[in-house]
Length: 148
Image (cartoon, rainbow, N blue to C red; front, side, top):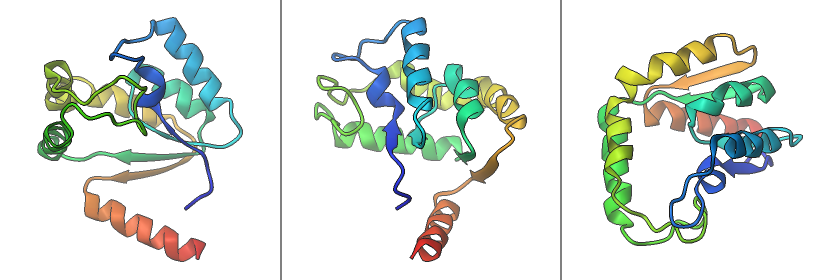
């Protein structure tokens, strides 16, 4: 809709077989991604949030309730179990149930959200924060009308 390149961070983070890159390798990858002239980056990865914010002009923050995030993780996981999600992940990353990730999602608001919000406070660009899918859908609908 915008004509900007969409970058899924998961696709660049996860190596085949769900292997993680080393921290310095990951920072180098993100630095390269944000050095491109235009982009939309999809993903969290709190440890590179500040780097991305220094290069971004707009932040769309999906600040959904924990129950919804957990539901979506479980639905996506069990709906696609053992299937490849090649558009989002590296080849060889079949959908799987991951207790560590589920725990992260469940505890995100208590353990990580405040740190992420603090990083966003100094962001000088435009911020759009959505607390429900319907609010995001309304925003996207308005963008479509505006870009028509």
